[in-house]
Length: 126
Image (cartoon, rainbow, N blue to C red):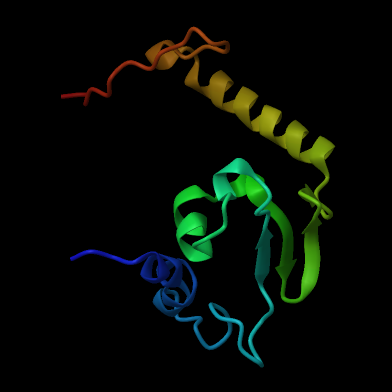
């Protein structure tokens, strides 16, 4: 069975909300539902010419094209920048988590920091 781009978009919106049991609150722009909206830039090569917006969104859009996000009607991202994120804290937490994982792994499977490490295939302890 072939799927249309519109069906794929519906899977990501209303059908995704329905699968989570939240279709009465989210998944479509309907009065009474939360206003969760993304605005995607269309002034890029991948979105030009914009002759099939749904198809181009499905095939060509990516997170880097998300310009604005509204969650429950409140703007949380504008001009491609998150308004609510403390990047210094996020970076510190990510680095701390990485360091903890490396410490706890204690070199198992050859784990090391840097670009040279290649994980070994998983082998069960039979």
